[in-house]
Amino acid sequence: SEHARVANFGAGPSALPVSVLEEASKGLLNFQGTGIGIAELSHRSKEFQAFVNNMESLIRTQLDVPPTHRILFTQGGGSMQFSAVVLNMLARHRLLHPERAAEDTVLDYVVTGSWSKKAVEEAQRMGGARVNVVVDSRTFSESGKAFDIIPPHDACKFSEDPALIYYCENETVDGVEFSHEDASPASFPFHLLGKNGGLVPLVADYSSSFMCRPIPHLADHAIIYAGAQKNIGPAGLTILIVREDCIVDVDAAAKLGASPVPLTMSYKTLADSGSLYNTPSVLPMYISGLVLERMQRHGGLKHYEETNKRKAEKVYAVLREGQEKGVFKRKVKEGSGSWMNVVFEVVGPDAEKAFLEGAERAGMMGLKGHRSVGGIRVSLYNAVTEPEVDQFVEYAKQFIAERSA
Ligand code: PLP
Image (cartoon, rainbow, N blue to C red):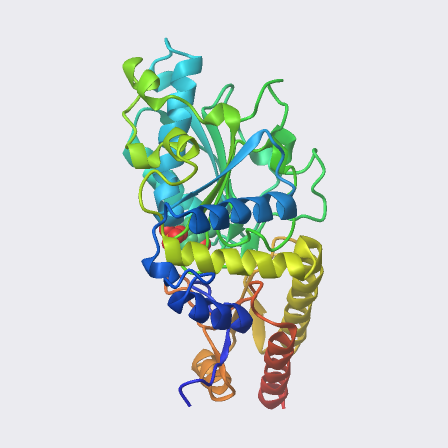
């Protein structure tokens, strides 16, 4: 029927909680008793402003964001931040080092997958600095060409005083993620912190793992950003956590030779206007706000961390079983696997097709790997329930039994 829903393991835009969608459909007709639907209501109304303030505090409380950092909302997705972080951090660097030539200005990138590679390519397009790939994890892959491992941190050659140090916490396409098991200051990439004594310009793309568990060393990051469309809400909202010293007067930097920064991309514009410089993505923000409220009611990130850990462990366990039986093949090295996006291959001719078709018949969608790498990808974002994961595991077990019989 038109109301029947399937288990959605898609990588994004991804599943949203049914209770939130039901609540949102009411708000779409009448927001908080105003008599006006949320998509029709002024973003300058006191009701919406209060809603945005509450969203900010829901993020601040759950992620334990310190007062040294601002929480900002914008549009343009993760991809726009590939350029925005470069522009804002180069402006900051210019103000700190007005005399330094562009060829002596360096941006350090840790490349562990398709998305950090894209970020590098955008930084190269932007100009204004030398782009230094401190490590490309493919050189540590057995095949020499796959993004399937988090490299050892002593392999990285960091610059002396970079304008930014960039990493992608969870590589959505490749299913590779930095381990939180040992998130001590000595572990990668956090061993960089305090390196030069000052404020480290550590920038992290958290698009596909934001709000799935606490962020290690959050307070030591310069910028953390994430598109909403994985764990939080619909596409159209981008969330930024920016340390105060990275909110700079981009026009003063431009007078000293930095590239001009479009006003809508300047963190100072966003901060000074309370993220309401221009019309924001009102509807995605509303739905995201409802998700954040629900998260708080359910016990906050501690609850999600526990649930997400169990979900990932269940899927990796059945993967191991399938690998032992020669039916599945893990694509990512042990210890580098993502909680949110589990990737693997189904061994044998047309086996992948059979796996996907069987899953679809059983009401499970979105399992096809990214078009650039193929295979299977099981995305386990917050809204994917544990019973849905159990359903997937049952199906995978059945498939293993049939194939290895
Ligand atoms: N970074 C990561 C880790 C992603 O997963 C994605 C999208 O899936 C992006 C960046 C790009 O985000 P957007 O499509 O919002 O521009």
